[in-house]
Each structure stands twice: as structure tokens, then as C-alpha cells.
Image: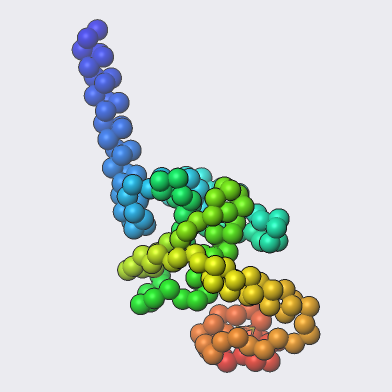
Length: 175
Ligand code: SF4
């Protein structure tokens, strides 16, 4: 009987070790910091996909890749595995700021910063009042554009036009 318990104990130990190593490998692949607890994930890699977060106050919805809890603070995380850049792009920064609004409303805590994970780097983006104001101004401009008959192109990137589904009817396409 003691032998059977010993075998069961060993099997349980091996399963626990395999799960631990697998979780550690997955975390290492995303490059997220150790010591933080994942409380929300949209990748399916560690947890099942959660429902999108929703802000009634700002009329916003979206799904950050992760929300981590670190010493009581909620931190939105956006992962762009193919992006290579020396600094966070403005569009990614605003996306992270929008997730911060969603996190604030969903978890009741305002994040001080968020993380942007590119292919080779993780950027810590401070979620300042200035960034929040920039985001709210951008959202207001987007809402105005929704009702406008004509909206000027906002970029000079032929690559974006080549991948755009409206290219044939746009009239401002660069591709
Ligand atoms: S084709 Fe027109 S709508 Fe599409 S990305 Fe280019 S400018 Fe924007």
C-alpha cells in the first residue's frame, strides 16, 4: 500500500512540475515580467478568452491582451509580437490608454502605467493625465468623423493603403 502511495505521489509531483515548466515557458515567450499575477487574458495561452471589457461612461469596448495585478495595481498589457520599433507608436500608446480606461471602469482602479510588448522590447507607458486628455480628444474627433461626409487621410503610409479594404472606393489611397 505504501508503495502505491509513493507511486501516486511521484506521478502527481511530475504532473505539477510539467504544468509549472509549461506555464513558465509560456510566460517567458510573452516576455511579461515575473512576480505579476495575470487576472485577465485574451490570448488563450494561459487562460480562456474573457469577454471584452466595456465602459458605459466612455462608450468604449475592447480586449487587452492581458491585465496583470502587481502589488494591488491593475496593469493593461498589449502584445504586438511582430512590431519592431525603438519607441512606442502613437497608435499603440493610445490603444493602451483606451484599455486603461476600460480597466479603470471594470476593476475600479486607475492604472498608473501599461506595458507594450513589441518583438524585442517591453515599453512601460506612463498613463498620465496628458495622455488621457489626448485619448479623449482623439475619441471625440473619431466620433465627429463618423458623421462627416468626407474625412481626410490621416497618414502617409502606402503599406496601410495596400492592406485596406476601402482602397477601391477611398479616393485618397496611396496604393
Ligand atoms: S485606402 Fe483610404 S481609407 Fe484605406 S488606409 Fe488608405 S487612405 Fe485610409
